[in-house]
Image 1 (cartoon, rainbow, N blue to C red):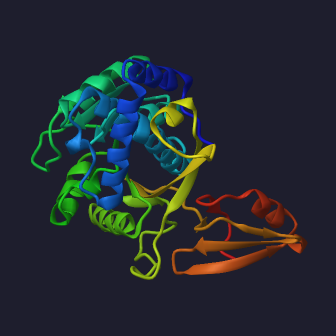
Image 2 (cartoon, rainbow, N blue to C red):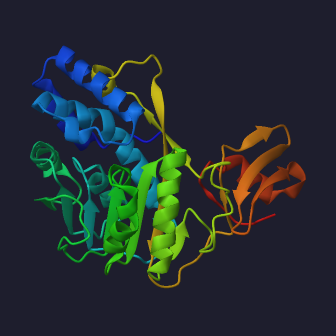
Length: 323
């Protein structure tokens, strides 16, 4: 499971402590309904400080887990990449700031673009103990005409779906700018995957190389409408979660789609695992994206080291061989 850093969990607990539990529960119920009914973004509907605190507690753990997973997979494919600056666009309360710091300790300075002043205020308070101490929030809407600071790493999590589809390509080109790496994350839904497919095509058109999750730069072998490329990360429901969310399970699974692209030539995975491996006695079934196609592969115990690797591989991991 992906755990929140102790410093972030403590900061969130402190932020929630000032509000009545019933106010937080009410705000979370409204947020949940807004997320279910469409991609019009819960954040613009936030009105009170309790709404903002519930929003952070409701979405920050999941965004942190998804962003951290995508970042670690991108970092695994780009050894030697050591960004000093990060631009986080539509960054909310800064989950991607917290996620990036442990993955790239070289980070020295982060700029977060966010339009809601109340979210910015909470994000600033939470970031006082973040891994990267030089964090600046800039109040602005996402706009390709907006001046942006140069950054080695540019991230955008769960924000592209809040924009009109006709603006997606222009926004992604603006994200790419002079960045060395761009990571875009969207919900793990057919619509989220479609947004990532657009972002992926735009990034390759800007001359960047796809390093994760795809093992190639060519057309996606998944036929849109038939399936969609997404991944999952499990996070625990801590006491923080239970204060704002109902549910009997001790965990939740966040499903997400993403693309990570970089400038230059970098190693490639031979394949990527697209579903939970199915493990049976003496064999493991894997669904792999090999670049040319999506294929199902069975690894048997007779294959020795490859079988031992298959027993430990997880959904979303790279795979060393296409066969």
